[in-house]
Length: 507
Image (tube, rainbow, N blue to C red; front, side, top):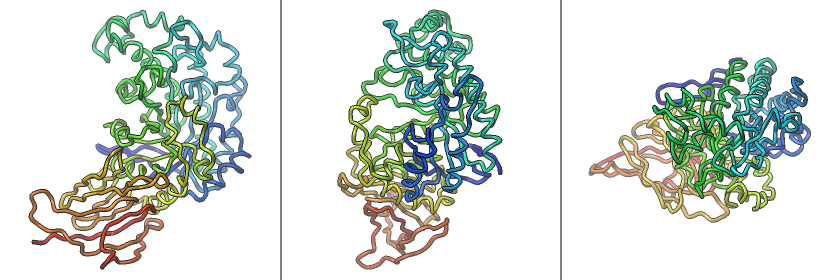
């Protein structure tokens, strides 16, 4: 089988699995779930089966992969691959190496216990931070070697190419201060910019002299990108499947250190693209309510959008339509997917507060039910979605804060979208529209209604030729009721559904 690759054209990036376009409809498991294959069998997979996922995003940790220096144990990733093959789904592996959520909690014990060799960052008061410094060459070198060993093993073991791509580290950056104040960092910060950084920004001098108040953050960004490049390049040399890094987003109170300083936030994507070219794309973890704004930032030229973590709330069932339809996302993946599937107790609010996440982002009530319906709908028409992704013939939408509707425009017709009022127990409005031909459209989604209109300044009237309910199964259209009379309207209620519509203009 062919290895997973990214096919990149002028306006479109497509993930290929065995040479065919693949749309990732995923969920990310809790961080610790994959540390036990028995736990996965008993407490994860049973709750995923009804959800129509085609991919699971799951962690592989350095501490369990390399329990002693140079001695590797691949039993957990191998077992995860075998389990996924039995379930008929693909995998995205998360490499929890040096950094996870701005800390170094997943490094092996032999790294944790040797703080002289694998030195940690320090805050401005000189107190140690539980995170290996990106300036620690020994730590980066050992992480890169372990990651390369994992990738080489996947190349040889994963003969069915179940693993689609790998995330390098997780939400990296420094929490709690604006930069690293360890002795190595102090020396590097006081020195002149390295030549490649000076050439990139077109100025020479110390970090403070060149960047002023932004210097601490850009200093950290530079060193995280250089470290990540070393790790990613080692892995890609062994097995060149797609690699990405994910971002803990910049947010209120907007102070470096309240979000991980140096990570791939949108403002510094250019630094990441320049200094970590072995990373194929940068991905946002979206727990903020303004979903589309974040997508706009990361669906930038040269950066395919993939959402590895999203709010595990009812609104994921709506946001997925905008992610794919409007932003051409490679895929979508709510976090805590096994909890969503069984509607368990949400995380402790104090934990969410520590991560700067609003409790509403983890409102699981019926979230699994709605997401399963959206995934079943989209999965049944995946070939059509892959065909129209990133073209002017498909767009998506999802209700933003205080929005009552939006206008969707195609060549011959406009569509006025009015979002339905939804309760706290159902998702917000969202959907997508595909222009199959100039008078023929496919609409899907939930909690909105549509009024087709002529283009601005066009005196024509618009009427329906036909509206047909239906569904896609294995990419084949299965028609249902033909709607006329009292039902002659385009209306989507809280259950995600599909309508085929033909229009005409007349005077």
